[in-house]
Image: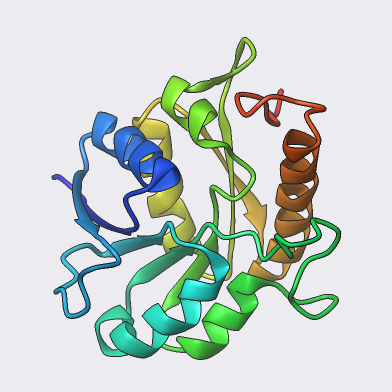
Length: 192
């Protein structure tokens, strides 16, 4: 049985995530920023958009996102200074999204990955690891299964409260890359 996954955003990350999920047999629907009244086909909806776009999507598509698994990949970084996250201390973009979409099953995933490591499927010589946080076990299991079918490692990182730590890891990784301490093909992998 083929899974349909909708991805908002067709930039580097949206395309890389689509590639992983398609390799695993999923059917992928893309919704671009120029589409304002699209019909969401997937039961899993990946928001591969900047943090600032989350509120707009939540407002415009709240009815269609009810009962869906909604995956936030954003890192709410202050891109002017690269010195802080823009969400309140102890919170996360994913927690804010869950508040805006109370009838959806919000997950945090892919924010600790770069597009290159998703596309290649490796970090160095290790398989790329996708960490997934959320409060709905079935939603997490479905996304992890889709990621693993695409050839990557998927790990349940705990409740949605762990999105705070995942965003901190994403923040660290982005600042290292921008500071040219690591390449855009670097990343974190979990050895088990």
